Amino acid sequence: MKKLVLVVISIFVLTAVGLAFADKGAKGMFSAKAGDEIYVCGCGDACKCGTLAKKEGKCGCGQALVKATVTKVEKGKVTYKVGDKEFTAPQKGKFECGCGECDCGFVSQKAGDCGCGKPMVKVKK
Image (tube, rainbow, N blue to C red; front, side):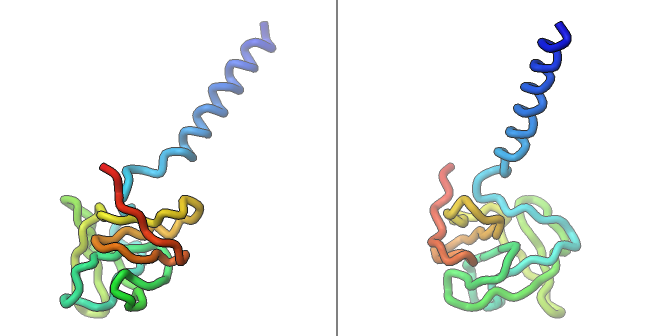
């Protein structure tokens, strides 16, 4: 009887751990909180690609991403500061990193390559 209980508990624990690692959140959602350092498109107001990432790279418009600090995340928008200027970008991207192997967190409103060099894929609804 003790062995059966141990087997059942082991299966439960392994299942819970597996689910925890399998759930990466909603597709195309950029996960951040106030105070986080992230990387964003450096074009400023001129560009509307809305690229957000957790690692360095280039955005879809070809510019190098720049380091920014998240000031708030609310109502589906990430507000961040680059230098003295504050910008916002949608938290949900139309495109995301498609490699499935890294944790770069790239999301964008426009297609392009993510920081790992792989093409971003359209987010399925």
